[in-house]
Length: 67
Image 1: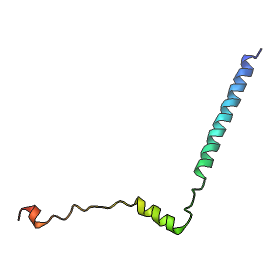
Image 2 (image 1 turned 120 degrees about the vertical axis):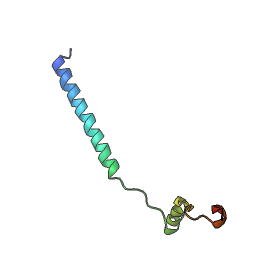
Image 3 (image 1 turned 30 degrees about the horizontal axis):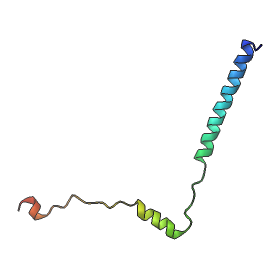
Image 4 (image 1 turned 120 degrees about the horizontal axis):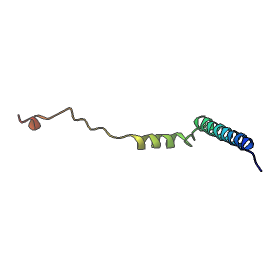
């Protein structure tokens, strides 16, 4: 039968292993490289899709002011 002391040591060992695996996973995740686009054309297409047109609200025409 397993004693309380053996169970305590097993729990500490398995908990330590789990924490080391978590730290290792985060280390590998942070240091992983992103996939590069295949060509310059695909990179420009990706950038073009990510841009959002901006509408300026600073200019108000004279007819909108009531003049």
